[in-house]
Amino acid sequence: MTKIDRRSFIKSTVGIAGASMVGGIGFGAAGKNESRKWYGFKYAMCNESMKGMAWEDQCALVAKAGYQGIEVATFSLVQESIDEISLNQRKEMVKTMQKYGLACAGLHWLLAPPPAGLHATTSDVAVRQKTLDYFAKLIDFCGDLGGTVMVFGSPKQRNAAQGFTIAEATRRLADGLAKAADHAAARKVKILIEPLDHTQTNVVNTTAEAMKIVNEINHPAIQTMFDFHNTVDETEPFHVLIEKYFSFIHHVHVQEMDGKYLGTGDAQQKYVRAFQTLKDLKYDKWVSLEVFDFGPGPQTIAVGSMKVLKAIEAKLT
Image (cartoon, rainbow, N blue to C red; front, side, top):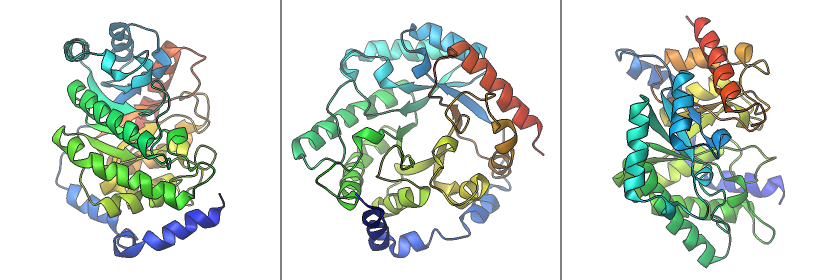
């Protein structure tokens, strides 16, 4: 579809709630945080680069590299569906995390197969219901692990396919999230709409577009997040985006801009101001390492990236 479709959707949904996002949010957040003590960044590592390793080995590697949390891509743990992991097994996973001093940072890649055939914005009502039903199971899995966020990226499973418009797809995405909101809240989980650039999907490419849905649903369980790698379509610098939308950012994904592990590019220089803004605003949620090139292996990815995170911290005032 053309860009006109997406712009038409934005124009039709901006409303008073969207307008209220212009200016001041970051300053308000900073003002509210002035008297709150900040205990430093807490780092997690996404587990998909460790697919095939035993859960205990994954936790041991992440903890040894200096992270405090592990973020789970459920497709990496199952053959067919999340039903394979029983409640007792989930309890054992929690015990293993605790053994290594880790917490579950949440879930991501929510609808990536397996299982196959899930899609959140298709015109096929039966497929959308199947997707919602599975999403409900993922909410329970996240809650059972003690995770607090579910990052809704899944570009292929939210894309507006041929035969329906971006506006229609975005409406269906919003409707589905609204239906899941109460269940997520009951499990103390927030569903975070992840902006993804136009090379990945044609549905929700910027934080402003994500915020249209957040404001429309107007439910505390539906929020957004910030991912350095996915800012290609943004027109404002990292630190401005973080400050503007800070009250709604409940998770941060970090990696080099090309998706490789930290230390292979210039993140150590380019990300300093963004991290300074997070520190100034006393951000106390997860900063989670998510990479897309697994070639170097999880050990190199974990250790190299932590070294850069600490180097960035050393530059902050």
